[in-house]
Image 1 (cartoon, rainbow, N blue to C red):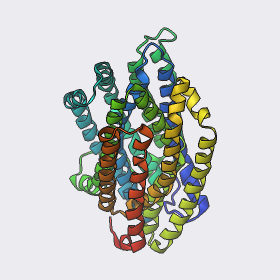
Image 2: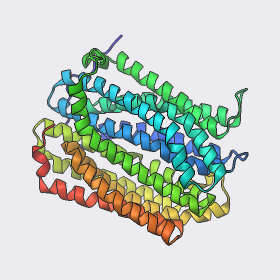
Image 3: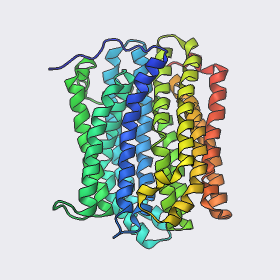
Image 4: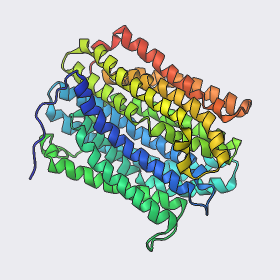
Length: 453
């Protein structure tokens, strides 16, 4: 039996509304991060392949580049859906969503083509370790086939968050996480009669997990009547007008998130020159950003959606108060997490099954990363407020400026002066402060108030 979704699409400006939207989003972000975390733990304990955890850093960030492109498309679509929800125009929401699916399919074909043609040459040129190169390319040629599933799966985020149905995010996410953990265990170690594929087993497990998550969430959308309410897929033919409108808002975000992760790939490739331990430490630090940062990213997504929704209702005067309330929650929670990580760093590092020297080398880096997490807790809120205003070109320019400073700093510290990696990780301080300052200035200027999308 199909249960119709709620008819009210307009959001209120309250702490209760913020939590109602942010908690399911954070859970949906947290479960995949747990996936990555457990995946890294499995690889850390896979003693037959000591390079696996190091290669996981390079391949993980590479896949994140393409995931980030989908995330940019997702954010642009989410902003448009939230604006139409604020304007109470449900008929447009289904059309936007369906056309975004076509964009996602096209982008996934491009990503697969690049991985098979250009990526081997790029990695050959940059990576010094031949075994690491072979292992990374073999993994990526399997993992990239999950991209179409990932993009279509990501777009369900934009729909559910944009129409204030974020509580359903957890269902598909939980199904994906359970599948990933199960097949990681079975395929990495070769348990219960399954082949022992080691590092490549993690790639196959991730694809299976994305497929299960995708099937589950679209079953939920159908079962809850959301598909009928917004006429999803009824107009499946390509509509150039809607595609152009989506790309107008999404393209700057897609480029923005892509260059952000590309710069992180650049970071990891230069860290590889410092040795396998430095690369493994940095891979673990990537999880440090991911796990505690789930609520921060959830608050950021909530910010862009609620800002766009309030503007759609004509309540622009309430946006500064909304940002202040979200900042209070984001920075307060992050501060508590950072204090705990600095008091008990070994509790986070011990599960990865590495040596005492690895833990000793990781702790100074962790101190630096927790500082970056605090900067991220308010920098990303202001950046997503700009996104919610609809002026995604401004967010793109902010990102480009921050990335240029980031990459210059990384090259000087990691390659030119060859400093210890904790100094290289200070690039995150520069990056997040470089994001915060112009975004804060733009929102304070009030120039966002008359932007139409």
